Length: 299
Image 1 (cartoon, rainbow, N blue to C red):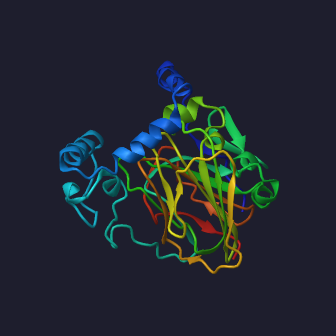
Image 2 (cartoon, rainbow, N blue to C red):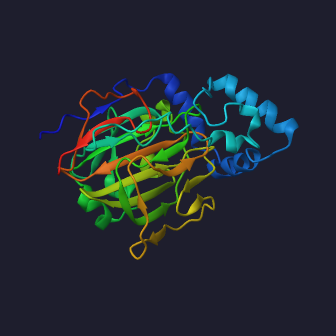
């Protein structure tokens, strides 16, 4: 089945985008994020209650589908960020060949990979190999495949779920910067997702390999997975790897696999010929966890 051209934000960067981005370069990303990591776990009522109230107002957070609908019932801001949804809030698609959206948020970009090149925004691409920690062996099976990038805003549900069922093969933590991943930085920071700190999760599915990349951002002071707990922090300076070849960690399609603190980005990558992404999906389109975003073609 022929691939459609990539779909991504086409508006060029404005002067306002550059003005919001430039101060991020000298900012101590990790120091700021470590401070946020501490503050969002403060449980004193005098601190957490006005903080949560202000956050709900500022970002218009919808609590109607949460298991706990009262925002002030959460013990700290981090628990509120990573709140669970009701089981019926994000139903699975009836089609068993459907690929599920990994997160609530908005499509940032999607489409085919041009060999090792992934679209970030109009005029911006970045290297698949660099995204996957510079490991050519990890990148090779996915070259010429397809991808979707989903941006989670601060108001969104912050848990990431499996696009397809699979067996965990490897996890890689790649240290890096923590630029914001909002629209202004996507349009202005070259190679943004391959520069930021990230956790790469490699799965073997019934149809082929699948990579889910959890990209950190400033104030995203924690990335967790359900099998390893908190992966970052600590920051570190070296790439860390965990092999699960000897384990039998199986996760079903639509099952939770990890979570972010605040908002960030999840990138899902498939090898060539394995997946056909929904041709009606467009950049900036809102999406939800478990929503069908494409279909398996290598049946």
